[in-house]
Image (cartoon, rainbow, N blue to C red; front, side, top):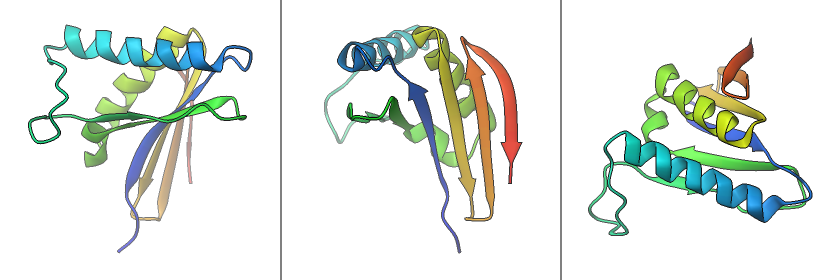
Length: 118
């Protein structure tokens, strides 16, 4: 059995990477609050987990959402739409299915622009 994973790659402003990361976190909080979620810090009492990667020398930040691990295209697309709109830029949805199928979907400013399946 192969690997299954998802994530979103968000292009950030290389001049302001920390500020870009804060904008990503704020957008996730706003989206989740609007969707009826309540932020909790109790690791044993949650329904959904987000991990926002660190700022590095590369102009991309990785976001993991536990709700996308079920390989749902709609949840992953919604997340990528929200992030690309919030950053007013580019975000890429990444879905690996059973180490056999790679799907990359490009969003720009909240709109789907292109798809690639291998």
